[in-house]
Image (cartoon, rainbow, N blue to C red; front, side):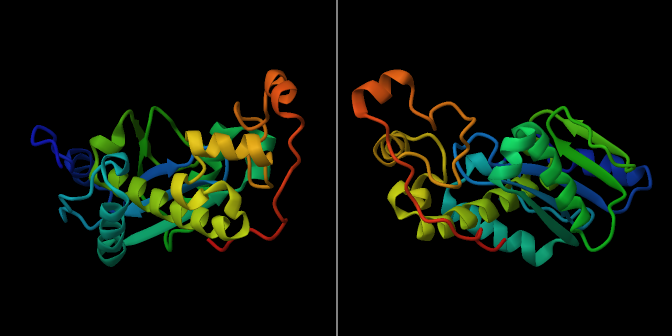
Length: 226
């Protein structure tokens, strides 16, 4: 539920009063998991149009996020999504991959935004006025909407990956380091969408001694559609 002490449109209203029209909230999902892509969203909501149920995605159940996602899609002025896959995450690191996903989300908007509200103390290398807001998904409705869109779209991708690699339970944990996921890794080894540079994906030396060298399991295939 909304915090009654927080005006979730305060940042948007301030920027609109400065003359900016297309204000995009930016957020990502998937920095922490051991597997799968990082996904970012850019969402532009109508001015002064509020969606009280749209809050930080981490505070909602999966069912609540799906409902909010449909509301956002129905009312958003514009919406873009960017996705960076595991190979690129491993090549440039997860933080840079998150920024790249954000840039891809901005580029996928139908028209460029006038101003960016970004979750976290970050700035992006684009010539667009912007503001990074720590815990922005709890303070800005646009960023909260972006957090929901990014999370729902990533969850859908992980459910598609579950069809390719059913031994790991990606439909349940979405790649996060749950005990069930770690047990699957110990039993089957990593599959092609695991982030090998992340701690917990590759067994430690002690686990190799105890369990033997787990073989890599899982068929290779093209990534699920966005």
